[in-house]
Each structure stands twice: as structure tokens, then as C-alpha cells.
Image 1 (cartoon, one colour):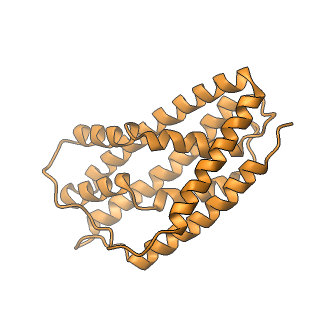
Image 2 (cartoon, rainbow, N blue to C red; image 1 turned 30 degrees about the vertical axis):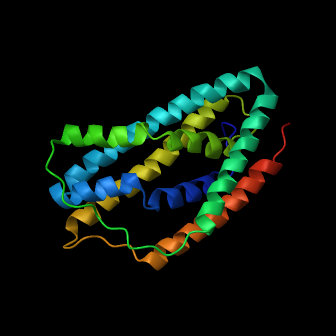
Length: 211
């Protein structure tokens, strides 16, 4: 439907990406630890709003390219495959590190300021835009009737899954009596599993053919 294929794989990969520790997760954990789960949820909503900016910007840009040339679409997919394999290499080479902890308690802010903080943290990160351009197109068929619409649908699914995880993280962090610590071994194996998945996705993307 809508030219989207391998949707279960997309959802699974998106969930794994969302649960990997990163700047967004640390911001949510820090705000939840210092001001409660509502503050963490405000940060999560800001992050989600920033993600929507990347989704629509990427969809509009991609649709313009696709309307011009099928060859350009092939080039984008090959570049995306290269980027995914590059990320996979970094994940597979990762080594055990110190536990990821919540940042020191932050000074209290109003919820709308926390929302803005989450929004800017996400929307000003160019890696997010590159990720969407590299990751999403491989789940869109070359003969999809409206590739931009398919891109937006997939982006919304990814963002919805991300919001579910982020709000759960906010609630869990707020209820914890001490700093949240992720064991180094768990983080290492999560990186390796995600890296292996990225290898498969990158190869699949690179070998896909235009119709």
C-alpha cells in the first residue's frame, strides 16, 4: 500500500534505533530526573516536533529529485546504502564504554522552554536529516505512485514509535530513585545487533533495482 514494502522490518529497525542512547535520550532523562516525567515528556514532544521537520523537509526534497530523474533516485539509494554501511561499521567496531548516566541535575525550566530545547536539539542535528534520506527510501518501491506521501507515512510511523519510547523513558527515569545506568555490555551488544541489521539493510538497498 502506498508503495511501501517490508513495513515490519522498518518498524523493527526504527525501534532499535530509537532505544539506542543518544543526545535526545540524555535530554529526556536529565529533565525527567530533575523535574519529573512531565518535563521529560515536554522534551520528548519537542524532539518529536523536530523529527517532523526533518521528515517533511526530506520528503519534499526527495520528491523533487524523483520527479526529475529515476537515475537520481538510484544515486540517492546508493549513497544511502553507503551511509548505512558506514554507520554499521562504526557500530560493529564499538567497544565497551563507561555506563551512560543521566546528566547532572539541571536548573528547572518551564515546559514550553523544555519543549523548545528538545525541538532545537533535534532539528539542528544534520545527522537526523541525513539518516532519513539514507534509511527511509529503501522501504519505498521504485514504482510507488506518490513517493513523497510514502516517505511521510514512514516518517510518521518512525516518529510515533519514537514518541512511545521517549515517553516511556521519561516515566521510567522519573520514577527511578537513583541515576539511570545502562550496563556497558548491554550497550555494546545493542550496538552490534543494530550494526548487523544495518549491514543487511545497506546491502539490500545497494542491490535493489529500479523497475
